[in-house]
Image (cartoon, helix red, strand yellow):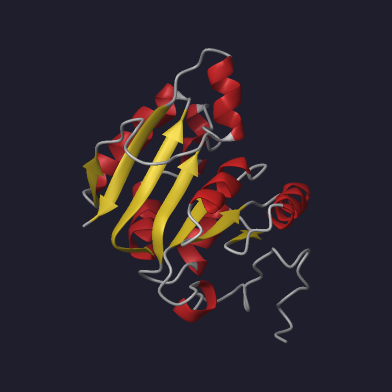
Length: 203
């Protein structure tokens, strides 16, 4: 075992063979099965609902907090899902340094921290340089889906996406495809807040 690899918290945790090199395609992909990555998966509600609906696809939820990862792993096991795992790492690091080129069919970024103060905008995930890494990780025709209730962050993100010229923006209607609600979305919609979203495809 690589000395930089630690024991998993659960059989449902994906532990990279090495944290300081990019993954090989065979280490993250199960043959030709499509792989989707949920960045900042929270309590795993969205991740698990997707995995239940699409048994023919594989899913990895990324979450940096240990407590949340343990809960998500338990929920995946309880649901008897063999197509979902949790990865305990920072989302930015995973996209920029771990995901192999052309390995992921969809990357989901739902309700991330908006970092509302102007001095903290540099900490926002959706920036042109990060979007280049997103594009590199996606398979040809792969999609990046971004959703937030924070209007100003959405406008920022949309501008970054359009300025980058990296993606084709696609329609995203409520009935475009199966898309379960996140725990945050359920909470915010109950409070009367609106969700803003954009769907992008790698050319």
